Length: 466
Image 1 (cartoon, rainbow, N blue to C red):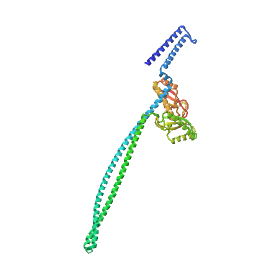
Image 2 (cartoon, rainbow, N blue to C red):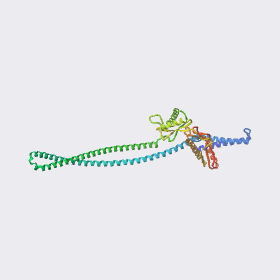
Image 3 (cartoon, rainbow, N blue to C red):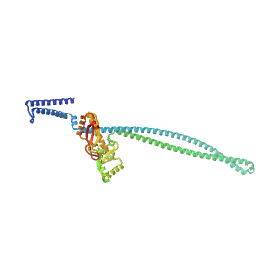
Image 4 (cartoon, rainbow, N blue to C red):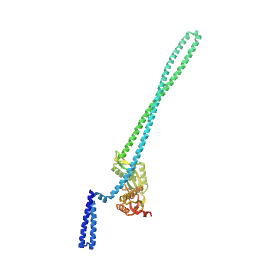
């Protein structure tokens, strides 16, 4: 309804102005008036032209005053294009991050499956050790029974020995009284001595058996104690292993949830800031310049919500060795360097950002009028043409970034004027068939001297291919 009212107002204003212009032209024609010494016919033509200009101007003024969209299209085209470029880049980065998170989730699921298999194997080992312990206990009980039987036999042998010893003593006493009967009783005495010897030998054998049984029981008891200690140690290790794995799974789950639901302050590979540093200075001076650069990076990180717990610092350098290598590189060559601070991983809000300090020596990458990149456009749809040209400019910007060019505050390196962009769209639409659009360097382009300013040159594809 709002659009119909606006169209009706424009039609009414245009008609009214045309009517007034026609009346004025007719009146001037009838009176044959002259402006600036011109003939009445030419004066009427000028009035008609002015009327058309007034109609167009009034229409534009009305649209601009009434429609916020028209004002945005007229005065904020550059911001809209920049926002579109940034949104597309963010979409691609977010898509890559989603793929990375899915890969990590799959790897963690594989790890959880492996942990389950290991847990089952430990449970089987625990069951086998339990069976061995039960067998050892049964063997110990049997050995104790054998020892008890041996002790009972030893008691009987001891009683027989004492009885034989008593008989021997009685025989010795009788021997003093019965020397005369020595010959008759010698055989009995020899038999008694032989029996005593056999009993002593049997006693010694039983004592040795008893000692071996005691040693065997002691060994079994030591084995039982060792197995109990081993079972206790295995139980502790098993419980500790399960606890560690549960902690690993919980930490991985927590980290995954943070990645899935957290807000990223920086993406992996994102350039936080870049600057120019003159090489060939002393190590101390170079260190001071690099640290000053990192303080600027820290300000940007703090504005994004990055921080290290318990401190006000927000940036960590990847490693001390790499930092020293950067200082040696800058101090070792007397030329300009592009120095970048690049995030080496995705960083959540509230977590520290780890950066790699990268250096690029100043060098000529494009000469004036050299083609930086080109595309072929076959459509005549303005939105499709604009999208294709923005893609070309994004490719040019990525190329400059890969060469190590110093970036602007918004992280880009390419630059083309709005007029150049609009003229390129109009040129593509004016040509018949396919059109080749080339981004050409406006001047010599160095890595440490930005931006990568280009102009857009269009030509029919048939001519460019001939």
